[in-house]
Length: 346
Ligand SMILES: [Fe+2]
Ligand SMILES: [Fe+2]
Image 1 (cartoon, protein in one colour):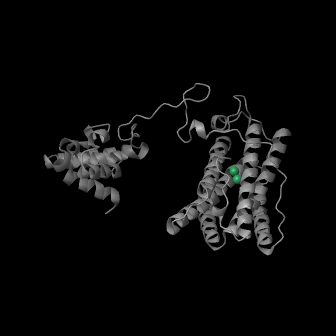
Image 2 (cartoon, rainbow, N blue to C red):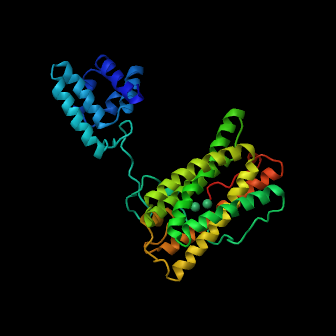
Image 3 (cartoon, rainbow, N blue to C red):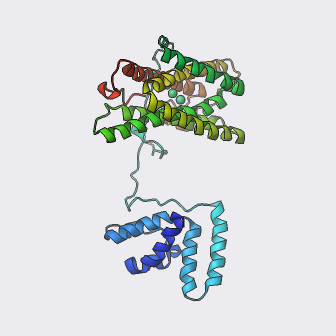
C-alpha cells in the first residue's frame, strides 16, 4: 500500500474518533483546517500528518466517496470520485495559504514594492562584484590537477559540438549541471559534520550558497531559452550520470572534485564571454533582462540580457576562486574546516 493510500485509510478510521467532524467530510471543508487541528495533542498531530500525506483532490473525493458509501450511496459517490480524478489530472490541489495558520508576512523590496518572489527573499538579492579578475587561471602542475584540467577540456568537446554558438541554450543546460557540485559537496560535509561531531568552518553553507546561486542562474536563463523535449531528456541523463560521478569523486578525493569544479568555472567564464561577444555583435538579440534577474542581482529596471550575462559571469569567477581555494586547502594536507569559508559572497 502506498503512503498516500495508507494515509487515507488511517484518516478514515481514526478521524471520527480523534477529531470528529473534520474527517467526516474532508472534501466539504475547504480550506483544510490545519490551524484548528494544531495543538490538540499527539493524535491530532499524527492526524495532521496523515492529512498532509493525503493531498490530492481525487483522494479527498475518494474519502468523501467512502463516507457516502457508508450511508448507502456507494455507486454514486464512486462515480463522483472518478469524475474528480479526471479533474485532478488537469489541476492540482490549491496550495494552502498558511503554515500552521500563520499568514505569510508581506515582504517589501527596497523600492517599497511588494516582493513578488517566493523562491528567494529581498535580503538574498545582491550586487555582484563585477570587478573580479576574470582571467585568473590555476596552472595545473601536479598530476591530479592535470587530470582535472584535461577532464574538463575533454568534456567541453561534446558540449561545443552539441550547442555550437547557441549560448542561451548552452547556458541554460550547463547551469543544470553547475548547480550539482555545491549541493553534493555541501551535503557530504554536512553528513561528515554530523558523523564526527565537528564544525565545518562555514564550508557547508558556502557550498550550498554556490548551489543555490547556480540554480538562480538556471531560473534566469530558462526565461530566455525554453528547453525542447530532447534537451530536457539530455538534462535527465546527464544529471543521473554527473550527480553519481561527482558524489563518488568527492568521497574519494575532495581536492580533485573541487579542482574539477574550479576548471569547469573557468570554462563557464569563457562561455559567457563568448555569449557577450555575440550579444555585442548583434548576433543574439539583447532582450530586456528577465524580472527575476533584475530583482536577484539588483539590476536597474531597464537592464538587458547583456547585463545579466555580465553578473552571471562574475558569479562564475567567484565559484572558480572558491573551488580552487578549497582544492588548495586539501593540497596543503588540511581539512576545509581549518580555514574559514568565503560565505555570504556570491
Ligand atoms: Fe552558473
Ligand atoms: Fe558557477
